[in-house]
Image (cartoon, rainbow, N blue to C red):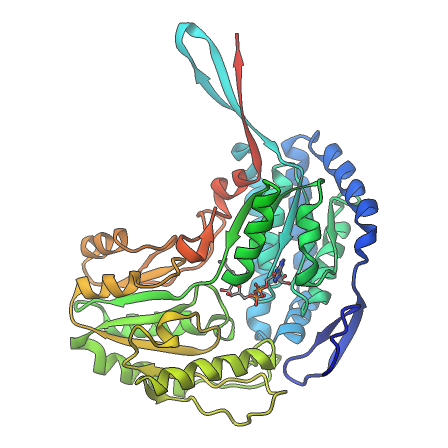
Length: 463
Ligand code: NAD
């Protein structure tokens, strides 16, 4: 048996399996040196005015835009997303910096309250201290920036523990902050493997945890955070249901459902994953959906014509193949794809695949499919569609297609999901709170609600 090398993190190109770079892991014995430095930087930072914090965010946006090509290339070569989508990810980070630079000061301004007998009071939003960001690889910049940007605006410092397969992106984020003029130590990247991260959560100088990742890891992190009574926001997995009702615009539904399913080579928490299609539209939807998948070009994610690159790691492609095979064994119909060109344990590609007649009890219905595989489910009524949508441990995103907006809104209100799109697909947006219910986690990111998750909401009464 090979003993895993836990002293080094490797950056491996999923297209070629070549090691791009290797980095020594952070020595946890140094935590008591580094975290006091971060804490000191945070205590200075919390004394700054909102305008100074906005200036840092604007500067971050400038640096991100200046280094766009370098950062996007790094993401593509470390985790396989197409270069086009990686550029869009960097743009989104820069836009979020601008958004919070402009609107953040109002989000942290005091709210006045008048009490009885003319007494005055206000609610203020004070930083918590050091926010530990434990992040996944799938949007290696956006996941981090959507935590860091509001955290800075609120006066917090951030320590990043990124996924082990994107160490280059993790270090680049620290360097972007430095180049933008962030105070020294206000944002630190620590290259720590997942199984050692509990030491960070437990450290007395860490005030709160922002975790994005799988449900299994989320449970462990929440347990450790709970043991130490630390505030925790969990953004976990999803198996988002999209309901195609009998009065849907079919072509629109197909277009949006294909696009959403394939976001990021199919590796997005809020990708549409289960499609609950009214029986009257099921045949035509399936045919048009499969035809759209057949037009996709798979290959080198650096090339402009590529729609789908490799998954982030070969083991992820193998897991997905297992979920598809088991679903077919249990009665799902392989409508398109499903055959890998190689079973090689070093091949990270999984072909775009459409499964039909998916039912509860199959992995394609019950579990998250993290890759370009769509699960089509036939339903015979609106009520059945809603019941099946909610028959999931997850509750992150959802969608409803109907030409009747009032009807779609009634349906949306019955869906157990933190986000819903009507005649569209779910995207994260700094103006809207983002998060889930059930096994998709708790708490929110983005908007003023996400920013305030990592504040001490302080009531002050003036006698
Ligand atoms: P993962 O849970 O394996 O890893 C995420 C992070 O947690 C990594 O940094 C990892 O090193 C760390 N980690 C793993 N086990 C840990 C432990 N026991 N203690 C502390 N840290 C630990 O997830 P992944 O494979 O990197 O990402 C894919 C998952 O993330 C999918 O399930 C996806 O749906 C989810 N995700 C959710 C959102 C959201 O906003 N809800 C966004 C993106 C991804």
